[in-house]
Structure formats: structure tokens, C-alpha cells
Image 1 (tube, rainbow, N blue to C red):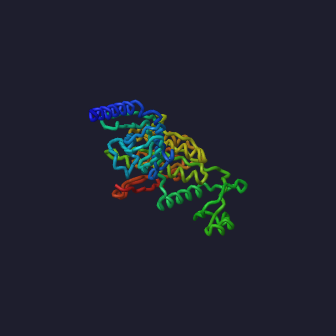
Image 2: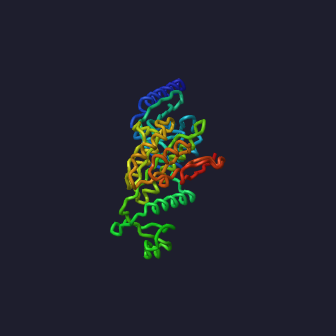
Image 3: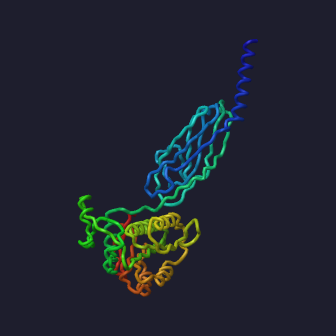
Length: 372
């Protein structure tokens, strides 16, 4: 009789425990999720941090966290993920009563864009694993990944050469009463501009930088289309990365920079058309716009766009065109429309394997080679 009573008591305890678990497991339970930074560049490593709070005496021996995000956020050490168009992640944790657990997963930003994690599923099982319960938590966290800023020796060499051409062509005059800062000496700098005190302290030549009496302007026009039969996103991405890199470099020099493109901003659904400006806020505006650029569809013929933008150029504005297409019509349109074609630079991203000499009508054409 006592054995039967014991079995009954155990059975009753199990039934009550299962009832209480099913009823109260999600009480005072929450999860917070955040990226270690809200803004990053392609190639940067970040962390996805999450905190699970169980603010009740009941322990949860098995919890599964499930969420999905873009495959362009590469959780390279996550064995519990499935990658298709999106990346699906799963984490198993155990949390005691009145306990807080914090964990993080490292990932690499492999592509520019805006990425959102809207919700996370929290799944648990009762003590007998006979019943699964799910609750959704809205997270609404987002990450903006800017295009990769090219910082190679080749880019620096190209930029310094371009900057030297611009300054020598414009014959700008420094304003000695408008001091802007100090930077490293470059080959086109005058010896008079060297700051000897700063050079001695840094053990390297430094020069004073002044704003110009005649302000120089740069107009960057990026083309996401190319001459190839099939679509090549890597060439389009190279154009976007170079546009961001040149904007970053020119604005660092204090030169007024504008930026245009023949594709849409995914958020505003408008063509990228950023008038001239300077400073960090203006750089952020350009980077955010290029990060959200939709390359899936060309929205305006690039030759037509370039012609219209050339007509709108001011007298003291240098034209920097970045285009994987170097077709004859584009170059002739520039020559026929721009008052001084020598003050136009065409940067052409192209594959390393296609190094054959191609005809050119513009004086300043720079081939930018990328891996096939």
C-alpha cells in the first residue's frame, strides 16, 4: 500500500511541477540583445551581445535561443548556424533561478549594408522534455556597415598623385590667417610650409595646413553599371568602395566634396545625390548613403547623368568619375561637355586578368585592378 501511495505522490508532484512550469516558465523572463557597435566598416570584427534575465526562483534547465540575420554577418565560430540567403543561429543555455547570463558571439562584417535583428525566439522544454514552449522577444537592433575604406599603399600613391594634380592645376593660394591643422609632409608641399617644431617632436616632417582663398571642390560620380554581358557585383562594389575612400581622403584634407551615383538609396528610394560639403557630419552622410546603395537595378543612364552633372559643375570643381565602364560614349560626352577635360579623372575598376591596353580619350584614366 505504501508503494502505491509513494507512486501516487511522485506522480502528483510531477503533474503539479509540469503544470507550474508550463504556466510560469516565462514569467519575469527577458532577453536583451545589442551589437558591440552600431556602425562599422567592411572587414571589421564585432560582437553580438545578449543577456538573459530570469528574475524568479524557478530554474530553466534548457533554453534554446534562435534568431536570423544576414549572411553577410559572418559568425565564423558558430557551429550552430545554417546559412542560406539569411543566416540562422541557435544557442543552448541553462539558467538558474534569479540568475542573469551574458554571452557574446563574434562575427565579421563581410559586406556593406544595413542589417536588422527584429526578434529572437526563446524555446524551452519542460522537465520531462515532453512539451515545447516558445516565446518571441522583439529586439529591433540594427547595424550599419559602411563600404570598405581602401588604405593600401597603391591607393595612397594614387590619391597623392591626384591631389597633387588638382592643387598644381588650380594654383590655389593658402590663406595664412586661416590655420586648419598639421599633417605629414608630401612631395608636392612647399618647404616654407614645414612646421619644424612639430617635425622635431614627431621625428618626421610635418607641414602646416591652411584653408584656401579659392576653395577647391571635388565632385565624385560613381557608376554601378559595367560593359560586361553578365552582372558583376564585385566591380560595382569596388566602385562604391573607391567612392567612399576618395570621399574620406578628400574630406580629411578639408576639400569640399560632393557625391553622386546612378542607383537608389534603399531607405529613401532616391538617387544618391549629395551636394558639396565638408566635415565629419558630411562624411557620415556620404558613408550612410553608400552603405544603403541598392545595386540590383540601375536607375539612370550613367552617360546622361554625367552630362547633367557636368553642366551643373562650378568653375573650381574637379570631376572624379569612378566607373567599371569606360565606353567611348561616356568619355566623348565628358570631353564635349566639360570645359576642361584635363580636370577630369576617370578611375576604372577592372579585373587583374584583363590588363590589355584599351583605347582612351581622356588624359587622366586610372585602372584599378581587383582579383577575378
